[in-house]
Image 1: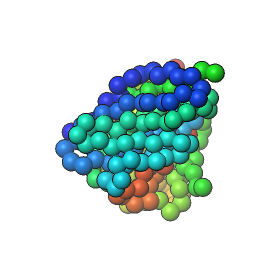
Image 2 (image 1 turned 90 degrees about the horizontal axis):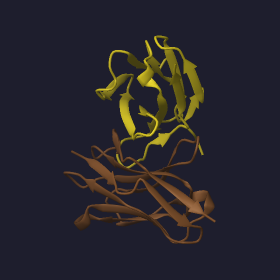
Image 3 (image 1 turned 120 degrees about the horizontal axis):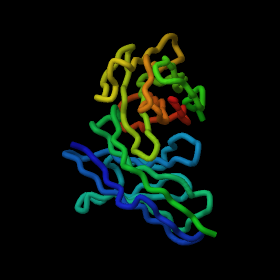
Image 4 (image 1 turned 180 degrees about the horizontal axis):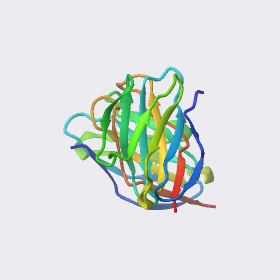
Length: 114
Length: 114
């Protein structure tokens, strides 16, 4: 069965410092993986997706993630945090090759301090 | 950019009452979904809908729940007799085709059952 584990429920960084949000996945086949972001009182916005093309995926707002099959990881990074990055981040895996059903991680709340 | 629109943003209802949550998916999309997020918990799949019928539903989606596409634009979720534990944020999503396309989510409807 497909699943994702987000290793940190909360991450706090200072503005201008790097961000690392960790995600490990479990899948019986080559998965499609996504990161979604949820700002307070907002919907779920797609940050980036991995679908078996390049292992380093670039997303919006300067975020990127690297698919590492050997480590079953798909960590989200950003070189320099901005105050506006404060939000909840979800690592997501698709159940089948298509996106008919998504399995969400428990989320990581990112706090950014000035 | 086209958006998935959900109304209302917040719905308060009394236990035992029927409630209908409304969604307008992106106009040329063919696959529709409902997810929910109980406060403090992960986002969970409820149901997927294609070609005017349910394609998959989770064990959460019991007989109290139903979905409908009453016209060419709306996609509704009905809860027949609400329970306290139905209080959650409900997200509608749509996608144009299955494969590598990510789901587009609405901003959600926060349902509070008192």
